[in-house]
Image 1 (tube, helix red, strand yellow):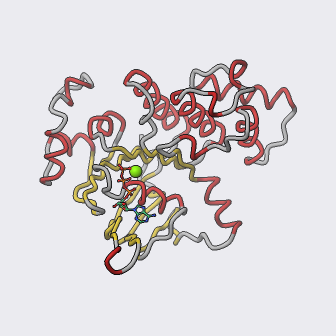
Image 2 (tube, rainbow, N blue to C red):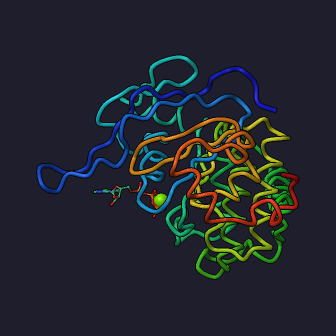
Length: 267
Ligand SMILES: Nc1ncnc2c1ncn2[C@@H]1O[C@H](COP(=O)(O)OP(=O)(O)OP(=O)(O)O)[C@@H](O)[C@H]1O
Ligand SMILES: [Mg+2]
């Protein structure tokens, strides 16, 4: 499904927090090429630098060194206008859904803001139709939720609402940082299926971040394995799972011995 067109690339990207004794190298000299329509998983245990890398990709954190390019050009995020344009194309959902929403806005307003962000001039009926369509994409009922605040929703409903917003904004790139952390296994596979549908229907590039190599295998074309800030192995998902080369990758896979059974996949 992915094309050969490189959408985002990084060369020798590093991020160091703090100074002297308190120095942490969260991301250490990583290079990558993410293609249009590709689903990439970044896999690693807690503290390996996944969220830091996601924030660099989003332009929420500045890399300490290295270069990030978008559509073949060095990424420019200096002015407000640069950032606004970039965020039209690149959106993220983070581990904690509360961090993504304005808690003082009801669901209807949160969805209306997506229409506004796109600069669409729509009638009230058209707006409502768009919001209903987005909700039904994620199996939520707009009529039941439009008048509620985020804190009145369950964790799973909130995560679906985040995906409904992505459906409305249809960015070129979605960074999904542990988007299934607050839901049970059943809702988890529904959310993953929604992400796959976004890619299939809109050609979205999805960067999926997880500590779970089994989930990563289930959704991805390509895996990047991170250990202590470094990418220790990358390549086709199947190739890596069937023939891991690096010690750390082997260990991650050994931790989910039933990976093939769990996802009904053939070895
Ligand atoms: N703002 C910050 N200031 C200082 N250190 C930070 C900051 N953000 C992250 N770190 C450190 O950088 C390292 C990587 O953190 P990061 O959040 O990227 O890990 P992660 O792979 O997303 O982990 P998890 O799976 O637990 O979410 C950790 O050692 C963390 O303590
Ligand atoms: Mg994280």
